[in-house]
Amino acid sequence: MPLTVNIDLSDDDLKHFARAADIARQRGANLTNAQVLSAATDMLTQARNSNPPEYVQDRLVVLERLIAMMGDEGWALGEEDAANVRAALVYFASAYDAIHDTIPVLGFLDDAIMIELCARELRHELDAYDDFCEFRDREAERRGLEPGRVGRTDWLDVRRTELQERMRNRRSRDFNGGFGSGFGTGYGSSSGYGPIRPYAPVSRGGSFRFR
Image (cartoon, rainbow, N blue to C red):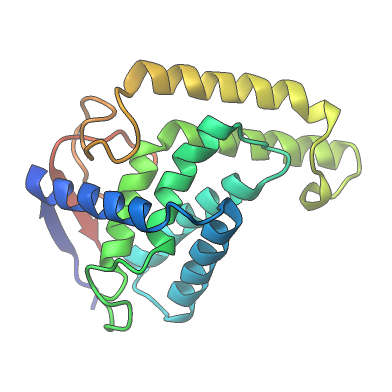
């Protein structure tokens, strides 16, 4: 019989995760983007191989999208935009862990929460990248191409530029500060954390619901 658990996170709890993100960035300052991607991918693989609970599995999908976004040649993030994504991924490339990953059921709980917070901070980036991938898939199929083999190409340039400009405009409008400046202060008001909505805006405090 499944069990639903609600976890309330106060502003102080969110500050704890913001500090953890800061520690991770400091520890990963000398890592290359390739090393961050490799380490985050290793963590993703380890988490999936551990047969984690559903609430972790759901959030690993979001981590996978962040990794894909960072390494996608066709998406070709500029330096500043890539730095925002790197700031999220470097947490999963560091040795910092509030709950040891080998603990059954709970081992990846802190990682799942951090993924959720990262997704809320980077919701505009994730929305834009999802739209880009959908466009690329449709166009590749129409042109008889395999989407996974399409890199940087002229017919993607216009759409990529449009989506990244939209992403920056929305981020500039909603976000006052950089990643980790304080979870819950980035995107203004929302209805709270509730059940998983990976791209929902950040609120101050709130709850996560895990099934």
